[in-house]
Length: 136
Image (cartoon, rainbow, N blue to C red; front, top):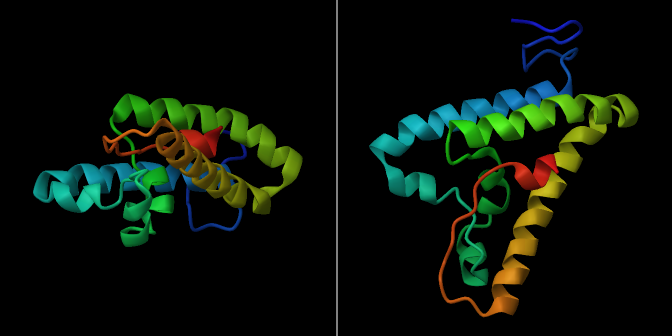
């Protein structure tokens, strides 16, 4: 199914940045879903842990968690929000600003969670997944 003016090929120069992000998130979800059945511990290495010491050992998780989702409806709600609102934002700001906004929002969301975790004095570890920070 195609929408007018939207090309679904993520490698095409004419496809929008929002469509590319949606496709990368869906691809990451499918890969981690399949790979999670085989080796769940490896998928946990991609999730963000707000414990500051964990960031030293897993710096990639600051970005990788953004592309993971806890379930189909989590993915669907984030991608629908991103697709419809993101198209408007992309029309206003341009294609080249969407990826930095998306990744920056995701990183800011993770760092905010880390700050809240530190201030609250929480001793439990939680794992963060999802593009909600980047989408918002």
